[in-house]
Image (cartoon, rainbow, N blue to C red):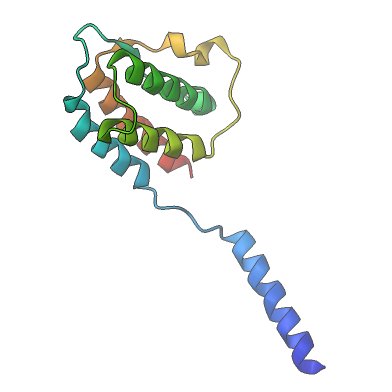
Length: 142
C-alpha cells in the first residue's frame, strides 16, 4: 500500500513539474521553413508587380493580427504566382502557414492599428525577409 502512495505522489509531482515548465517546440522550426520557402520561391513564376502587405515593426498587441495577415498574404502569393498544387514551393508555403498557425500569440486585435492594410506593401523578397523578422519576434515572445 505504501508503494502505491509513493507512485501516486511521484506521478503528481511529475504532472506539477510538467505544467510549471512546459516543453517548448524548436524555436527555429518556423525560420527553417521560411528559409526553405526562400530557396524555392525562385522556381515560381511570380509577376514582377506582385506586392504584399508585409508586417514589420509589429507591436506586441498586434502580433496575432500580423500573423493572420502574413498567412493571408501567403495564400495571395500562392494564387498570384500560380504555384502548382503539391509542388515543392506549395509544400514550403503550406509548412510556413502551418507553423504560423500553431504559434501562440495574443488574441487577434480589432484595433485599426493592427489591420493588415496598415502594413506597407513590399515585393516578394522583402516580404520573406520581413517574415523572418516576424518569426524571430514570435519566438522571443514564447
